[in-house]
Image 1 (tube, rainbow, N blue to C red):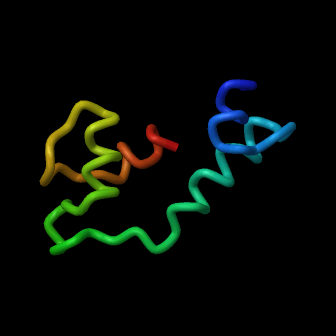
Image 2: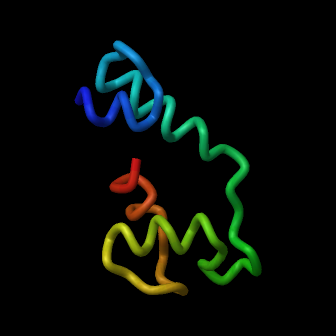
Length: 64
C-alpha cells in the first residue's frame, strides 16, 4: 500500500480511498471511435493481457 500511495501521491490514505481516487481520475475517458479503442482503453486492456477491440469494462476494474 505504501508503494501504491507513493506512486499516486495519495499520502496516508486507506486502500478504499486510494482506489476511489484512481477510478475517479478516469472520469471522462471515452473510446476513440466507439470500437473498444483509444489510448486509455488500450491501457486498461493491456493490463489484463487483452488486445485493442476487446470489451474493456472488467479490464478497467482490474486496472483500478
